[in-house]
Image 1 (cartoon, rainbow, N blue to C red):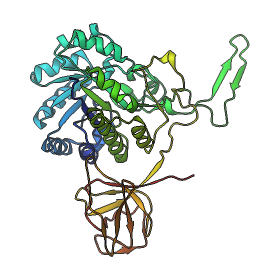
Image 2 (cartoon, one colour):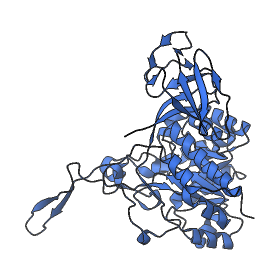
Image 3 (cartoon, one colour):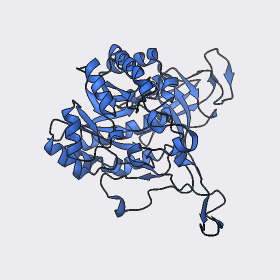
Image 4 (cartoon, rainbow, N blue to C red):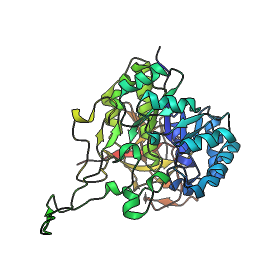
Length: 422
């Protein structure tokens, strides 16, 4: 019997943590420390809001993994120690770490805390996995360059070691994220959480003759070329193959700095794929279609099931971000009574309602609006827009921070969207 796989989603802030849980995550990962490989986390989470997030996740029977996976300088060791102590006090369920030194320090301060080894440690084989296992690591988040066959061999030799893999999200130009480009060009250190995403920039290429100094510009187009811009990882079509192997314990989604809609859709889609697999109803085309609604750089299937030399088309050399098939117009509040505009919402216009995983609702029709079901999807049309302060609007824009009343209660954190035509 294959493992019942865990779905692990990003927790970029308190709201996105709640959305991840509502949309099907079994566990989330995030942190408040500047050593979490996302310096923005310091702005999105402080110790108090992170504690609130942990309490929320635990109240739903899910887990929180604390990111402590940066590569610290000597001057940051005391910060590592304080972060470990605070995370223990808050009550996280595991640490995600990258270095042997942080493993040792974690074992000293919190000997009972489960340790998950970050993909930054680049584990590609059973010898390296065994070294970290002997150091006390419970789970290895494998290098993104590893194959499923190699993971099967690791599990065979270390059956008690949990294995986690990335299945969706941004792909780094460098080997498992061990990048120095941003450090070189802007002084921002990727492996301490401040990557400037230099690989996403357009570059102009030149060829120089070293003998006479002639410098020739290599023409691509008027915008230069995104020569280092990798397409995004998308393994939704291979969830069935991954789960059939029986060796993977957790599927991980990248994206702590991405939008709430991204968190919701990607989490729900992979949760659906997992549930469909166990129910014998796997449908790869369904998941691919839904994931195209998020903003992305184009998709590729990484290295897990195919080797790099067996394919091409893994880079987007034209642009660093692509539009999804849908535009998001609104996000419903946690209580399901009001929505907040993300784009212009107008009267007498139908918007599709995206519900949390397993969510359902009742159709209704009143003086505020109508909610109806069509071809298996729910839609909402507003007859009038009334804010909390009872002010009425003909349309509501994204810059307006007023909550707008719904015709009837919706599941909290539902979204309104429309397909982009043309």
